Length: 262
Image (cartoon, rainbow, N blue to C red; front, side, top):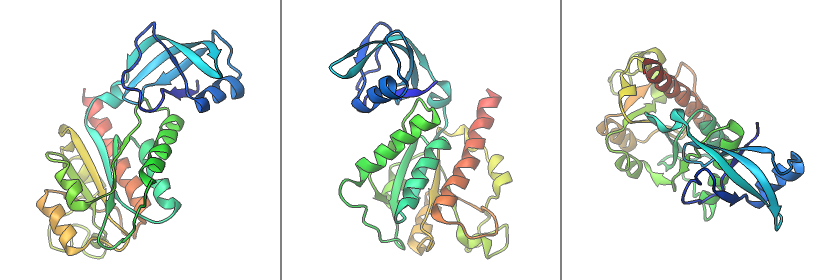
């Protein structure tokens, strides 16, 4: 069944018996594209981790009116650990691609990063466009939660906003060195080791991706000081958006392992 979202900014999730009005785009898709008539079942999400079983009761003033029949928590979204992608900004549609895949791969929040070797000004209004991309991707993926997109920040600002999180970052230099060590001699994790890391016991897991030019020395030192673990993603150089997806696949596996253990 097609998933619909409550209007953006809805402060309270409707309770069973409540009625609410869908936005213009959702109304068009429900009544014109799907040709739903009053009495049709409608599956909705509140964007915060709950599904709503609804019924189309009328179309008034060109807007679909839906009655809520039941509200269901989505444990997969509301249980921990939460996944966060902190991703260096890249030009053009590649960052949009990274946002879409982050949603599909289970990120609960996305933090765009301004990094030292990728001088990109996201410009006015970009946050709103990112939020629209993420909202559309959440609908397509059938998620009950729309990931939060934060304003672009420096790495230092991002790390300060995530106290207590378990941090992992892709270290491009590790592919040029020995497979087991980073450029400063510290051990790095491969995919198998990451799955045994015990990270699932944390409430928040963060995958940090830098620019294709690599981290600056100051940024790498900040990651080390924050306790971030370097992860080796194989022997080849990855684009930023590819590294973002690859890391989230690993963290999603960590999360699924915790869910299986109960």
